[in-house]
Amino acid sequence: MSENVYIIGAGIHPFGRTDGRSGREQGVYAVREALKDAGLDWPDIECAYGGSAAAGNADIMVNELGLTSLPFTNVANGCATGGSALAASQQAIASGMYDLALAVGFDKHPRGAFNAKPSDYGLPEWYGQTGMMLTTQFFALKIQRYMQLHGISRTTLGRVAEKAFRNGTITPHAWRRSPVDLETIMNAPMINDPLTKYMFCSPAEGGVALILASEKKMKELGADGVKIRAVAVKTRPPNSFEVFQAGISIEEGGKPTVLASQAAFEKAGVGPEDISVAQLQDTESGAEIMHMAENGFCKDGEQEEWLANGWTEIGGKLPVNTDGGCLACGEPIGASGLRQVYENVQQLRQRAGERQVPGKPRFGYSHVYGAPGLSGVAILERE
Image (cartoon, rainbow, N blue to C red; front, side):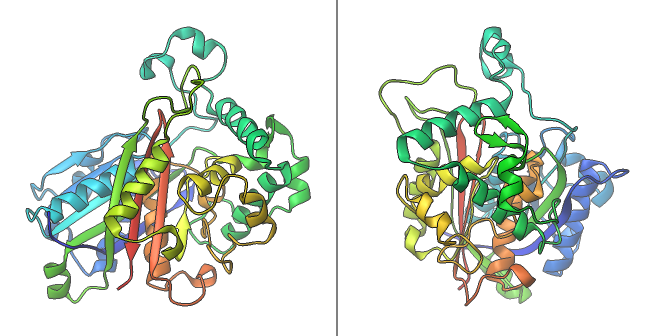
């Protein structure tokens, strides 16, 4: 595969709760916004990849968008559904088979925490009976262990959430648009120790669509493109410790995020020091902290200093989750990973408004993580 691939259109339906509009309809809205952004019509799109976890098959969107007979592939890969749709679209164009492709994700989750069935993940019923299929409990135990190993304080967990809600106040597509101060976050009801209610994201609704083009087509259209330097998706290796895992090995193994990050950096030919803005999976505050190190941006334990010094703020040395991440936007599974890429497209085009990172950002990094231990990374470049 030798074709360079660019994102030339990006559309989003606001995240949160939209009564009276289905998840699929939110996805259709996002597609129409992306088409408008790219200056294209639906019949121009040559292939599509998309999915959702709880709102039906993505290919049914053609009922609203138009019956053009294009190949539309449904993607189902947990929280990495959006990232996988992007990877498939990128590969379709890089192969030379197509010049224009759509990656789309949407969802509409019921209220309440994600609570999957053990059998869906090859686990015995006793695992669910312990309550560990409720992901809040697993993530709390995982960050507790990490905090003890690497000296992370509870205050640092709170600072992650405080930053997220502050960024959400200046993000039109965010669900949570009100600031929450550190004291309120720290003193809020404890959900699963050490995580209070403001340290978790919530299942939500929303849709995101991206239109990809070959370099030839982008130039032909005179489109405003952001180059995809690399996309990588990895599943868990031996002896890793991931969500919906019934035990932890004595011997520490690899991590899917580390593998995906390393693969993406190698493909892109850049390193963590080159990244201008990053969107990292923040299912809860601890996830952002752990993923800072797993993606190579700092060493384990250094997050304490990073958060205390404001280095991940919009004006810091590496802005992280500039739109508030999952904490402020919520997590509609099918759309969440594509939201990160959408945000980086806006940042690299310098269209992010009040949340725009200073200077002229060149490289944008997005990372998504989900059950049962898989990660997707995309690196974008503004040439």
